[in-house]
Length: 248
Image 1 (cartoon, rainbow, N blue to C red):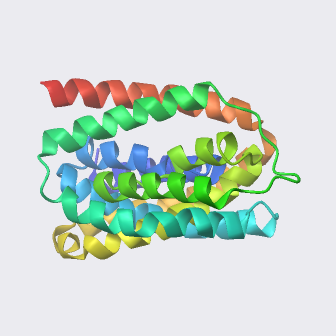
Image 2: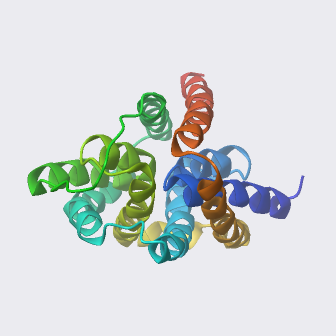
């Protein structure tokens, strides 16, 4: 299968995940770039940030139109993660490929378990505690910088379980967090962008942006609980594959 077809196909899946779940795009993008398009782990994490930043910004517009974005909460959450994301991006280039792969797999597995055990929440009348939002945002920013993930697959469980937002609002708000975190991490990875295969990144990102709009429409038809369970099972499969690969 040609590089173009692989990039378009996987990009559409990544966009679908981001548009429907408000996260998970980079968890799929990184292994796709490594195992299907022959990127190194460092190049894959940098490339995923480019793809996820562009796709998340597009999906954010669609969710904002429906009033599913808590701007103040999202900006507070994201702002706390900017410095850790920048520092994490600087550290990532000095870590062995096997360590990055294994760490990514462990984080994906933890996120999958959290998604399989959703905690119902409601953002009606709930006052977000700045300290809790800042602490959660800082931890997410560090993960974003080191592993090249936008953070949405962890942000959604945090926004629902820790800050008490409804699933649909958490999805929209997480896209704001992902966009800010991804751009911050890219600042420290600017030097690694020169070696990226843009012939693969460009169609990947284009298909992801289009897929995000379809994901938004899909989210309106299926329950958040159903979408979470399906995606969590995919995450577990990806995590298992990457852990085995890192151990070999």
